[in-house]
Image (cartoon, rainbow, N blue to C red; front, side, top):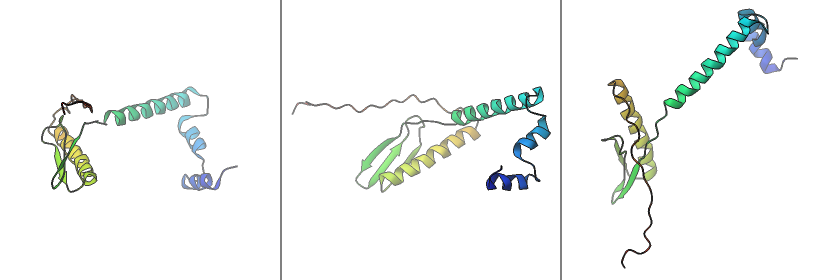
Length: 129
């Protein structure tokens, strides 16, 4: 028995369920045509997932407190900076700046540089005082 949500979807599909529609489009279950179709769908989904993952860029962002607010810069993207009164506003602006910077590089046909910056916090206990 179909749920009301499924029945609504069936109505939108002209009174035919998704599995029935797939059967009509690509053949009955267990046939080579249907198996090939399902294999292609899995491959397309995997490709889409990989594409989405490859569109992600991770950058190190340096935040600096100043007497009047906060500044942020991205060492791997020279010139990509943001300033604001609060750190949270600066974080929002630097995310936008990074996106704008990367879009500009892409439009100009320039390869997005690989991350080459690393950062660590180092604590010095005795510094001669």
